[in-house]
Length: 147
Image 1: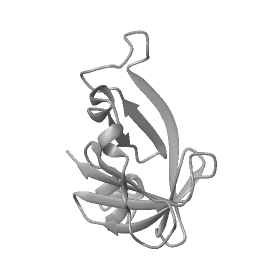
Image 2: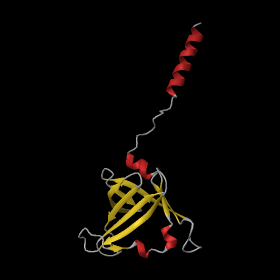
Image 3: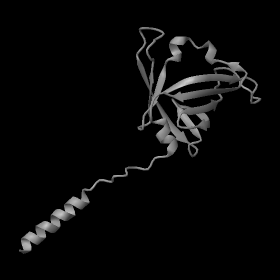
Image 4: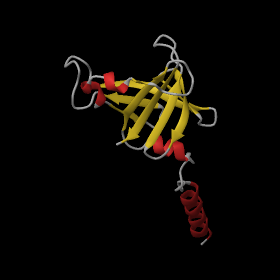
Protein backbone atom coordinates (compact mmCIF):
# COMPACT_ATOMS: atom_id res chain seq x y z
CA UNK A 1 0.00 0.00 0.00
CA UNK A 2 2.85 2.38 0.87
CA UNK A 3 4.38 1.68 -2.55
CA UNK A 4 1.16 2.59 -4.32
CA UNK A 5 0.83 5.87 -2.38
CA UNK A 6 4.50 6.68 -3.01
CA UNK A 7 4.13 5.99 -6.78
CA UNK A 8 0.97 8.10 -6.91
CA UNK A 9 2.74 11.03 -5.21
CA UNK A 10 5.75 10.75 -7.51
CA UNK A 11 3.44 10.67 -10.54
CA UNK A 12 1.52 13.75 -9.36
CA UNK A 13 4.77 15.63 -8.67
CA UNK A 14 6.16 14.66 -12.05
CA UNK A 15 3.04 15.79 -13.91
CA UNK A 16 2.81 19.14 -12.11
CA UNK A 17 6.53 19.81 -12.45
CA UNK A 18 6.36 19.31 -16.22
CA UNK A 19 3.33 21.54 -16.72
CA UNK A 20 4.05 24.21 -19.33
CA UNK A 21 3.27 27.87 -18.81
CA UNK A 22 0.18 28.46 -20.94
CA UNK A 23 0.69 32.22 -21.00
CA UNK A 24 4.22 32.15 -22.43
CA UNK A 25 6.56 35.13 -22.24
CA UNK A 26 5.02 38.57 -21.91
CA UNK A 27 5.63 40.72 -25.00
CA UNK A 28 4.68 44.33 -25.59
CA UNK A 29 1.93 45.53 -27.88
CA UNK A 30 4.52 47.10 -30.22
CA UNK A 31 6.42 43.81 -30.41
CA UNK A 32 3.19 41.98 -31.27
CA UNK A 33 2.28 44.56 -33.93
CA UNK A 34 5.70 44.46 -35.57
CA UNK A 35 6.08 40.68 -35.62
CA UNK A 36 2.65 40.11 -37.16
CA UNK A 37 2.21 40.23 -40.90
CA UNK A 38 4.17 41.82 -43.70
CA UNK A 39 5.22 45.48 -43.73
CA UNK A 40 5.57 47.52 -46.92
CA UNK A 41 7.09 50.99 -47.32
CA UNK A 42 4.21 53.27 -48.34
CA UNK A 43 5.97 56.65 -48.02
CA UNK A 44 9.55 57.88 -47.99
CA UNK A 45 10.27 61.59 -47.57
CA UNK A 46 13.12 63.97 -46.84
CA UNK A 47 13.24 67.13 -44.71
CA UNK A 48 16.49 68.47 -46.15
CA UNK A 49 16.81 71.50 -43.84
CA UNK A 50 15.48 69.77 -40.69
CA UNK A 51 12.66 72.30 -40.19
CA UNK A 52 10.00 69.66 -39.55
CA UNK A 53 8.52 69.84 -43.05
CA UNK A 54 9.17 66.82 -45.27
CA UNK A 55 9.27 68.64 -48.57
CA UNK A 56 10.79 65.99 -50.84
CA UNK A 57 8.79 62.88 -51.77
CA UNK A 58 11.45 60.25 -52.33
CA UNK A 59 8.87 57.46 -52.70
CA UNK A 60 7.80 58.88 -56.07
CA UNK A 61 11.28 58.22 -57.46
CA UNK A 62 11.48 54.61 -56.25
CA UNK A 63 11.13 52.17 -59.18
CA UNK A 64 7.86 50.21 -59.19
CA UNK A 65 9.80 46.96 -58.97
CA UNK A 66 10.93 48.05 -55.47
CA UNK A 67 7.56 49.35 -54.31
CA UNK A 68 6.20 45.80 -54.04
CA UNK A 69 8.99 44.72 -51.67
CA UNK A 70 7.93 43.85 -48.14
CA UNK A 71 9.58 43.10 -44.80
CA UNK A 72 8.78 40.50 -42.17
CA UNK A 73 10.04 41.27 -38.67
CA UNK A 74 10.60 37.96 -36.87
CA UNK A 75 10.30 37.52 -33.10
CA UNK A 76 13.91 36.26 -32.94
CA UNK A 77 15.25 39.67 -34.07
CA UNK A 78 15.74 38.85 -37.74
CA UNK A 79 14.13 40.74 -40.59
CA UNK A 80 13.39 39.20 -43.95
CA UNK A 81 13.16 41.63 -46.85
CA UNK A 82 11.36 40.03 -49.78
CA UNK A 83 11.62 41.37 -53.35
CA UNK A 84 7.90 40.79 -53.83
CA UNK A 85 6.37 39.60 -57.09
CA UNK A 86 8.40 41.99 -59.29
CA UNK A 87 12.19 41.86 -59.02
CA UNK A 88 14.23 44.73 -60.42
CA UNK A 89 16.91 42.27 -61.51
CA UNK A 90 16.11 38.58 -62.05
CA UNK A 91 19.59 37.78 -60.73
CA UNK A 92 18.82 39.20 -57.26
CA UNK A 93 17.96 36.88 -54.42
CA UNK A 94 14.26 36.79 -53.61
CA UNK A 95 14.95 37.49 -49.94
CA UNK A 96 17.59 39.22 -47.85
CA UNK A 97 18.18 38.71 -44.13
CA UNK A 98 18.97 41.39 -41.61
CA UNK A 99 18.39 42.18 -37.97
CA UNK A 100 16.25 44.48 -35.87
CA UNK A 101 15.74 45.37 -32.22
CA UNK A 102 13.93 47.88 -30.06
CA UNK A 103 15.81 50.34 -27.83
CA UNK A 104 14.95 53.26 -25.53
CA UNK A 105 11.76 51.71 -24.14
CA UNK A 106 10.67 50.84 -27.69
CA UNK A 107 10.88 54.45 -28.87
CA UNK A 108 13.76 53.56 -31.19
CA UNK A 109 14.08 50.67 -33.61
CA UNK A 110 17.46 49.55 -34.94
CA UNK A 111 17.23 48.01 -38.40
CA UNK A 112 20.40 46.52 -39.87
CA UNK A 113 22.60 48.52 -37.52
CA UNK A 114 20.92 51.88 -38.02
CA UNK A 115 18.75 53.62 -35.41
CA UNK A 116 15.37 55.08 -36.34
CA UNK A 117 13.07 57.09 -34.06
CA UNK A 118 9.55 55.74 -33.81
CA UNK A 119 7.17 58.67 -34.38
CA UNK A 120 3.90 56.74 -34.80
CA UNK A 121 3.17 53.07 -34.21
CA UNK A 122 -0.22 51.40 -34.50
CA UNK A 123 -1.28 47.90 -35.49
CA UNK A 124 -1.18 48.97 -39.17
CA UNK A 125 1.26 51.93 -39.43
CA UNK A 126 4.91 52.34 -38.43
CA UNK A 127 6.27 55.87 -39.03
CA UNK A 128 9.99 56.26 -38.35
CA UNK A 129 12.52 59.03 -38.85
CA UNK A 130 16.28 58.95 -39.11
CA UNK A 131 19.32 61.01 -39.93
CA UNK A 132 21.27 59.07 -42.49
CA UNK A 133 24.76 60.38 -43.08
CA UNK A 134 25.93 59.51 -46.55
CA UNK A 135 22.44 59.54 -48.10
CA UNK A 136 21.90 63.29 -48.11
CA UNK A 137 21.18 66.11 -45.70
CA UNK A 138 18.37 66.38 -43.19
CA UNK A 139 15.89 63.94 -41.74
CA UNK A 140 14.31 60.99 -43.53
CA UNK A 141 10.81 59.69 -42.85
CA UNK A 142 9.69 56.17 -43.74
CA UNK A 143 6.14 54.97 -43.32
CA UNK A 144 5.51 51.24 -43.29
CA UNK A 145 2.00 49.85 -43.72
CA UNK A 146 1.09 46.39 -42.51
CA UNK A 147 -0.34 44.21 -45.27
